[in-house]
Image 1 (cartoon, rainbow, N blue to C red):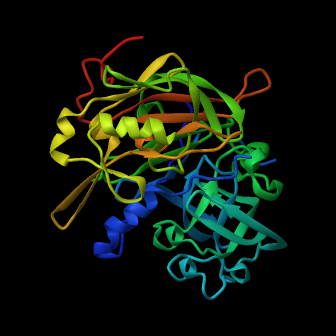
Image 2: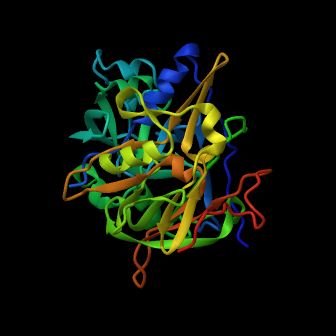
Length: 400
């Protein structure tokens, strides 16, 4: 078995005390993009540490420049550009005041580009310029990439975010201005054994780490086999076909099949508003702020499972999986992990399986080969000490 290159995991604690619940909930709505319309041979996958903030957003560290300037970034399969805040930020771009900023003058490997770039996300937007410098990630270094220096970040979500920037892991067709995504650069330069990356998200808020992004493969220690692979239907987002959604043994959603996007940059599970309203009613959700739903914490043990039929296999979420629990100073808030999001045609309607889903299931993103198209593999994440049924796998309440 090839050796695995790992980076020690870290967990970032929010620095702003009682602002933490507000910051956490801002991040719950974050980063749904609206733009749907000869190196040495490595002997195994590379591992990038993922941190978590109140269990609803995951991010890890990269370096840019020589010497490396370090940044915390969201690894986002729903977009394809890399960007970080710039030292050349406009004065009134408040997020730059509170985050690490890239200084081109401090890097001996900086190469100017100057092309203007603008990126729109579901709850945030930014503008800036393109630059070129060396990337350091998961033990790989000295890789020249083109990235965005953000000069203007007017959205509140970036001000309160625990991360500095976004590292897109979508397909090249999503990239603004045709910039090669960093993952594609790593593959093209032969720095990875396979054109594969995978995510393990540790949702235990008491745990010492947030999970791992594995570049070049997957780690079987992260999941309970087998992996179920589902073909990508449109290689832009990691979009797949979902056959059905069930709430308990009664309510059926996506009854005729529907599109779903597996997206690490979205914290919740989203879907068409009519279906999400029905789902939240079925789990006892009470309308709250900004389209979210409050759940009575005492009801969690009695709530039904929500299950997704993908590739002919049911993927079950218990209430412990899909209820987001936020605690601060003795106060406990429980919120539904399902939120309405209507994506207009031709991109929508569709569901987005974000971190609420990926906290329960490891996802393997395979770009494919000349003989096989891209696909997403899913398997139940290992949870040490958890009772997942007699065979170690979460049990659905029905069969198909």
